[in-house]
Length: 136
Image (cartoon, rainbow, N blue to C red):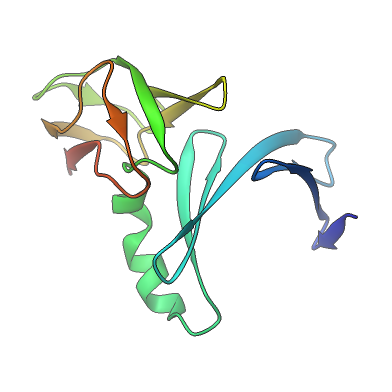
């Protein structure tokens, strides 16, 4: 079963994985994990929080930048590519996680400087766990 909205198709693959296709033909695998008050979605190196129907869209928008730097699901940290003080550019891979035998890159949501790294290689992190803090 596939669902389509605004030229985007979403096809369930099982094990909380979804194939997301665009009108341009680009396809990516997304991962979804239930969270408190909504669902965590990991897609193309970014993490999003989709609130339940009772959640506030304004609250979700305000959390996007912070949530982009959190674990989308239970995962193991396999690489930390930055340290405190590192300058990063939008899209840089900051941390690599592994979940369900797949690598999940955590990318910088914007330009900035790493304030703190809150995880280490080999650590098991849970959904929503902060991985690092980024200054403007």
